[in-house]
Structure formats: C-alpha cells, structure tokens
Length: 255
Ligand code: ARG
Image (tube, rainbow, N blue to C red):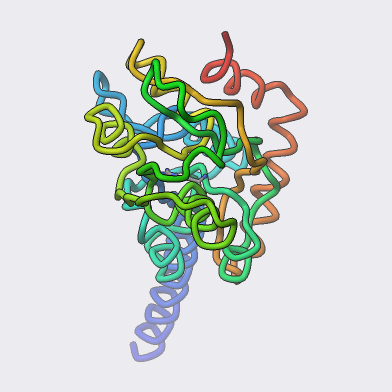
C-alpha cells in the first residue's frame, strides 16, 4: 500500500512538473509590447474599431506571427516608456523610437526598421520660418523627451539659436493643437507624423522643409533579452525579404 502511494506521488509530481513546463513555455510564447499610441501613423487608436493599430504595431504583429508568438499590446505614456521596459512591464518597445547613442546605453535596439527625421511645422501661411535658424525668438512645442525635444533643446542651448520658449507635452499630438491655437509658432516633430497631422487637418499646418535630421527607428529591448532580440531581427529580415514588410509599408505610407 505504502509503495503504491509512493508511486502515485511520483506520478503526480512528474505530471505537475510537465504542466509547469508547459505553462512556462506558453509564457515565453508571448511578446508584450509597450507603445505610446498617440503617434499616427506608427501607433494610434482606431476610433472605429477601438483597436491599437499603425505601422509599428502591424509590423510587430507580423513578427509575432513569423515567430509563432502571441503579441500583446500595452498603451503606455511615452515619458515613462523606457523605465517601464526596464521594470518588466513589457518586453519590447515599438513606439517610433529613434535609435540614439544615449538610449543605447540603457537598452538594446533591433535592426532599424524604418528611416525618419525631424521637421519643423508652422501654421499655414506663416512665411517667417524656413529652417532651424529661424526658430530664434519663436515659441516651439515638442513631445517631452522625444528627439524633437532633445534637438530643439540642443539648438537652443548649444547651437546659439535663441528659441524664446520650448513647451514640452506628454502626447505627440498636443504640440499640434498648441500650434493651431496660436500658443506657439512652431512644432519640431518626426516628418511622417507631421505629414499625417497635415492630412487630417487640411489647410491648418505647413511643413517648413523636409527632414533636417536623419533618424532610424528600432524596437527596444532590455539588454538581458538577447535571445528575443535575435529572433526579432531574424523575423524582420524574413518579412523584408518576403514582401510582408512592403505590404505594411504601402498600407501606411503608400500614395
Ligand atoms: N522618434 C522620436 C523619438 O524617438 C519620437 C517618438 C515618439 N513616439 C511616440 N509613440 N510618441 O524620440
């Protein structure tokens, strides 16, 4: 009898361990993505479906499908997006994030997945701003801690362009409202995002010039997450080679 009980116990233990293993496997089968979904066309809320969509998110979902992993998207604040990654709230940032040397000290980036750059936006009809030097004496709005913020700050503090005031906002869409309302004269913003705002608000804004910086976006991961990083890079290469990347690109940037 005792022996039977013992064997029973062993069997139960083995089954439990197996189940545990399965559960752990399931867990690694999910990519939890953090994004600040107020950055169309890269990540935003589709008002009609209530779904989070955009170039980055479609691409991330395609990467997940390629890897046989589920993709779960969390909408978070841009300002805390790197701390949130580091504290484990998600394992990938897909949020139009520019690969910078400074950020590379803290996170790992995937291979670049798209090229962008900053531009200056004014109100339509304003002829007084033609380039970064003309921001002298003007009020400028940016998203806080974005490369737009960092670049405007650098123009002001290091390049000797006397920008009157830099107003920093939580959401990337806020600087445009500020400009529309006449509270600032210019916005420094990623060009594709500026274009999207122009299209949804016809006749209101003007893009001063094409991009005056060159930037590459990458997905950001914790430094320790090298295995997932390699998988994402591999999947990205596959999607670029098999036409899926182009399809997603056309969907958001095609004429
Ligand atoms: N590309 C800019 C940066 O890396 C702005 C990105 C903002 N992204 C967003 N989802 N709000 O700083």
